[in-house]
Length: 158
Length: 159
Image (cartoon, rainbow over all chains, first blue to last red):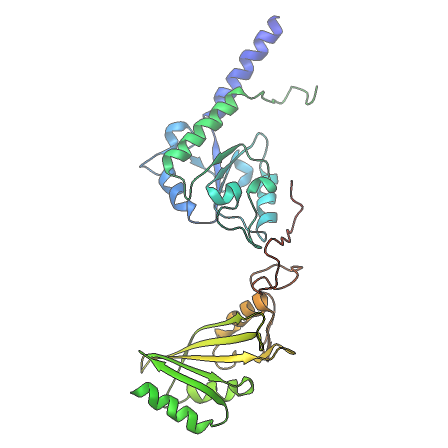
C-alpha cells in the first residue's frame, strides 16, 4: 500500500518534470517551418511552456517535431533521426503534410509520418497557426503527465 | 519586328529543318525537326543573336498521340532581351535527343530531371543519372502511364 503510494507520487513527479523540460528537435522541411519559427520565437514564445530549448542534435532531444512534407527519399533519414533519439521520446506531427501527406497524394510523398515512426500528437493545419501548435504542445504535456514513466532502476516489462 | 526577322533568318538558314513558326505579342516559338537541334541551337548561341541563356528545358507527354513526347526549350538573349521557345517532337521508337550540355552548362541538371521524370535519354550527356528520385525507383513518374497511386517506399512502412 505504502509502496504503491510512493510509486504513484514518484511517477507523477517524473511526469511533471519531464513535461516541462522538453528539448525539441525541429525536423523542418517545408513552409510549416515559418510557423514553427514564429512559435519558437518571442511573439508566441514556446519557452512559456517549458519547451524552449531547441537542440540541433537528435541525441540530446526528447521531442521530435516533424515540420513539413516528408518525401519517400527522405523517409530513411527521418527514421534514423528518430532511432538516434534517446528514451523517453515523443513525436509531434506538425502540419497537414506530416499528419497525412496533405495535398501531396502522389508518388513522392509519404502519406503521414506515422507510416514511418510512431506519433503522439497530430497538429493539423496548412500551416497550423502558432496557437494550434501550442495547443498541441499542451496536449502532449497532458499525455506525458498521465503516462506511466520508465526510470532506470525499474525493470522493464515486469 | 525583330522577332519576325529572326524567324525569317532561321527559315532561310535551315529551310528544311523548321516546321512551323509563330510570333504573337513577343511570344516567339519555333518548331523544328528532331535531328536539327544542335545545329539550330549553335546558330542561335553565336552572334548576332547571342541567345546566351537557357531558361528552361522540359518535356510534355501527349499520350495517345504520335509522336508522344515533345521537348520544349526556352532560351533568352541577355543583350537583346529576346526570348525564344524551341519545340521538337521526339520519335516514339527511340526517345533520344541531343544533349545541350556542351552549349549551356545548366542543361546538365535540367536534362537529368527530364530523364528522371520522362525517361528521355540525352545523347552526349556527361552524367545521365536520376536527379530527384532515388536509386531503385522504377519507371518515370511524370509519364501519363505511370499509375496514379503507385508508391515505391524506400523503407518498409508501419501500416
